[in-house]
Length: 511
Image 1 (spheres, rainbow, N blue to C red):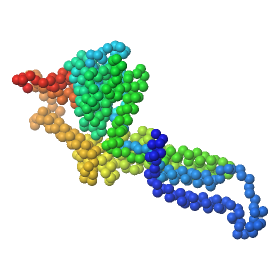
Image 2 (spheres, one colour; image 1 turned 135 degrees about the vertical axis):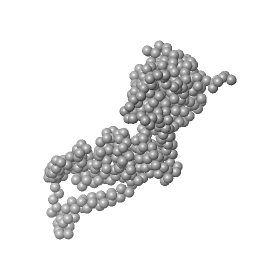
Image 3 (tube, one colour; image 1 turned 180 degrees about the horizontal axis):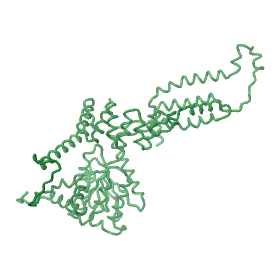
Image 4 (cartoon, rainbow, N blue to C red; image 1 turned 120 degrees about the vertical axis):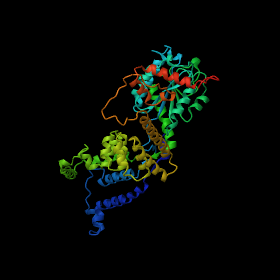
């Protein structure tokens, strides 16, 4: 690690090193002025000067000139931007999309792992969801067939009831089909701009080999949380993390998931060098403490008077301290709040529109983010504006922003991907609106706030549920809200419908 950092070390702004020239010149002039023999050499004869010069006793070993020069040297190097590692751009998502494929076969009901293999797997999945916070996670259940329980979502509360309801009795086909689960996960993650990770939570992978598992996963990474040790000491065909009684396994999974995701992001989105100059602020501050010594009292009194002279009404409205306002610019204060995760406060502090928009975006204030990004005329600003407008469901404005980006950069992969997603969302919204108008036309003679009932009570029309309608993000929530049933009943119907639609029909059978 150290060798890699040394080999990658360079300066982002090397031209700042030219500022060392005036620093060296000032230091030479100060040191020359402090030499008494040079000051009186033009007045007193040299043979007399050496006998008339009195050298005071040195009480302070560190000379102020050298102290000032050291602080200026460190400051110039910090401004030059030393760096030795890369970081992702601020708008790249920092949490990996994860599809969890849970084995719900009969073997998961064994109790050799308390309370049972399946219940222990569910506990670990809950722990992983809690550790990942708001990162998007999906869930697949599989035995002899694989079924999508929930697509990617950042609300783990939606996953909880369906995860708790999973039992081997819900599965329409018994057996173990991890390859089918990986294929379904890869299909679900296909629309993501970056590759994700598929986590197999199982006790065994059956007869599947490493080649078929990796081929089924496609571009995505594959991990396994092993609920039970391998039989006869055999090795796993893919990288696995054994389940533990503490959170060691969860931390290991998080590291592997995030590492693979960041690698995929770096390959596709690119990285930038991280400015590490702020580390030099610590030695600069420590050297500045040396000025608290005898002989410097007057200077510090002047400084305190200046601080006290700041009027009381100069307290910023955003809550930042008056002291910080003297020493730090609003953008610097905003960056401190941003790094601490206080994005709402950072959005109020930043004056730079790009950073103000990024902070507002991170604070989920997409209206303020869009307003800030409109003031940025760069390609990055237009791309960010498209993202904010898409989050606001202003799809037409988002499409316009992405088209502006592609007009300047036709090969921008991220803009192409987002443009396709927003167009699809706009078409879906328009299709839904047209369908609602078609199914519920407003009678021309029906006045507002007037209700009509069907006195004959002949009932409504019969609706056939399609398999794909049971896998949408809002289907589960709508089902539980409108139908008095349990998550287990919903999943059982959903899995059976999907299994029947996927099963081949005998020749001559009706469609």
